[in-house]
Image 1 (tube, rainbow, N blue to C red):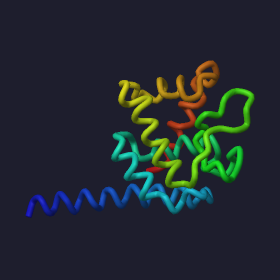
Image 2: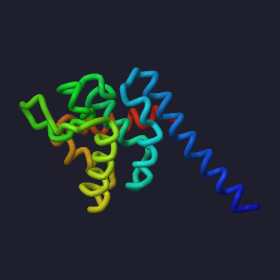
Image 3: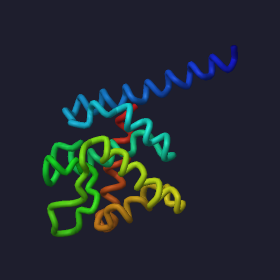
Length: 146
């Protein structure tokens, strides 16, 4: 009985996280809203906070509403270099979420880079000179998804 109770609690907690993301995404009219479950499962698979990818998308593109092109499915600012208005293109939202989740794990977490300030120094180097503005933005939005 104890195991069943624990499993039930685990499932409820997982569902609650997806519901929190979905609510946040819908409040901001994000095209990523239908993918809350995928965002949580990919964060779990790759070993980081379920709010991270959404917070990055909020800071980089207002949750996918200000991307270089609608067909890029790149709300994360991936491969958008200084002076250029384009970046990596993805086939669809599922591809983008899966790719960026694996990228975060491989480029940062697998190398022991797990502190958000250290991630921000690599993800958005100019933000370090601006008082870690990228890190502050991501932290702020992660804190609003509760």
